[in-house]
Amino acid sequence: MNPASPGKVCTSLNFTHLSCNQRLIVTVRIYPLVIKSTNGKKTVVAALRVSGLSKTFSNDKKALDDVSLRVENGEIVALIGASGSGKSTLLRHVSGLISADRSSAGEIFVFDRKIQSGGSIAREAADIRCDIGMVFQQFNLVGRLSVLTNVLTGLLGKMPKMRGTLARFNKQEKQLAVRALERVGIVDKALQRGSELSGGQQQRAAIARTLVQGAKMIVADEPIASLDPSSARRVMDILSELNRSDGITVVVSLHQVEYALKYCPRTVALRDGKVVYDGPSEALTPDFLSELYGAESEELFLPGLNPSPKKKQKRTRVTNGAGKRRNVPATAANALA
Ligand SMILES: Nc1ncnc2c1ncn2[C@@H]1O[C@H](COP(=O)(O)OP(=O)(O)OP(=O)(O)O)[C@@H](O)[C@H]1O
Ligand SMILES: [Mg+2]
Image (cartoon, rainbow, N blue to C red; front, side, top):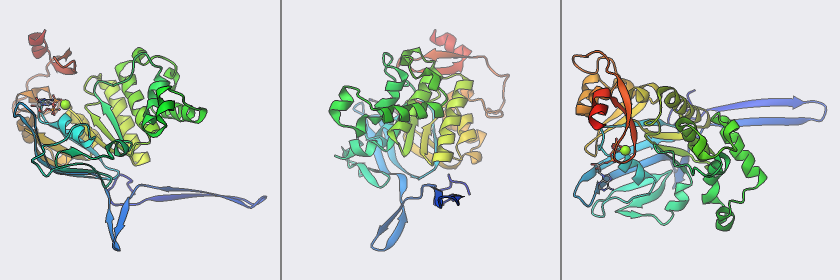
């Protein structure tokens, strides 16, 4: 049974019977199905529920327009859309980092706990955020700290402030961080400074931090946009593996549609702050994607996306005004140079 299937439970039992001392070791693995019982009625708790969310920035730009979305526990969902379509804004709302319009009745629940509603962030937001592992395009590691310490900062939300401020981590916590680094394949970098890692390694450290944090949902905003294809695949493989084997819910915004198709059975597409598609990734059509991305569609690698595909353009990496790096066609790079 696929553990990522919403609403399904899967168990596996291992029995080891040691007849000499009659010890029975039982390992039970239950994939996450969170069920709430209210007045005898059982309901499946969604990892994320967004309803009627709108956001207008001070410049009157409507970045989100009545967005509603439900992500089941254990799903891995891609969020796609052209630049400026509202992906980051939506993910920042989900993490309770910004609040929606006061005039809207927008609400967001994370594992059935309200993180914001009616334009106000809930008092418990910091606590709810402990369940959300955030991964950003810009890695967000502290360059001068060791990779191990960076990963250990995932514990800060859960430990006494003083111990956290002094970065006093005990042996058990350090072991937890080492195991997390092992899982993302960079345990050999544990004692190096964050700034000494490559982009892909830094992103893996950021994911290890969410593991140490014990996040039940990873919200990743373009985690692979600055990476070369092989590092990007590695990072997506790790997110996918954590989703499959640990049942961690993943919501990941991606500029590169081919990764959404490869790694995420479900895609949500935004255009001008509105959800314009929510369904199976495999049902996305080249015509829809071409329309979704407009002038940016030539950046997509999908064969047959453009009505009259020209020979594949040489691509290069550029940094935009906001310091974000992205692969763009060489012609665009020349224009930006
Ligand atoms: N702090 C802000 N103040 C004013 N406008 C903002 C702010 N943040 C985002 N916007 C605007 O909101 C819209 C959505 O931006 P957002 O960053 O969410 O898009 P995105 O889909 O993440 O784009 P990209 O793919 O380039 O990262 C854009 O028009 C953007 O200019
Ligand atoms: Mg963005």
